[in-house]
Length: 344
Image (tube, rainbow, N blue to C red):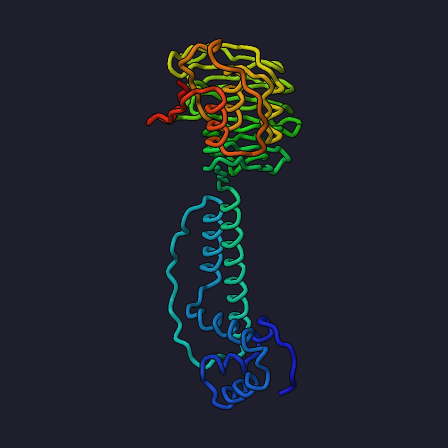
């Protein structure tokens, strides 16, 4: 037999190969076994063709085949199992030339069906949500499909919808994150938390929405414009529109909601990964530490009785910063069972 690179479709239409697969002709069996020994690189191709032929043990009439194809289409369109169709079982005997074309056609149908199933599985996979987590003192940088850049703060979780960037851009946040939103016309960007939804079009803002060990929920706008809405009207009757330098703040204990001003430089600075304090009050220190590490810190001593603090930290752990701060100011730091940090 001449050495050549055979394809699966060639083998499916070769009578001698079909005889070999079914063991119905000893001469053909010896012929193809010898071919495999002489051409080991073709063994996989021959085995694939053989598997296809052996898988075809039933035959449908033209009407039944049309019904079968229609049922497959229904399965793909409606995403549900296709109804079964009864078909007569044909005993496998020495294949005739007239059956060769049918076997090839049936094999092609199997390959097409398998391809559609793989495509459907791929599409289903692409619709699955993506989850990003940061469970340590370090932050995590994430870039979404539309170019939006997210800084995920410690102990935070971001879930990106599987259909993200199709018609909408929705993400779910637990914890704290800074969003630098890419401008995409007609596709609003929305950050959902357990209580509120913040919607923006081309802007930069930070959302703080920890579900434990948090004193407040905050949305801080650095640039652009955002709208904050509540999932339930009793939480917030009307949407709150923020301009740069404004912050939406809900006290999680009293549930009081207010719009206040804040220092944009605080967020811009913590985004660089460097904490700089220059003769800072205890309130300024707490604000920066809460923004940077995503924690809640309370001080039981009147601010005017606490020494001002100067220092610079480059991506240091929270415990290290608090130890230095408490040493300089003569304060004691206590990490409560509820997750808060208390300065006494």
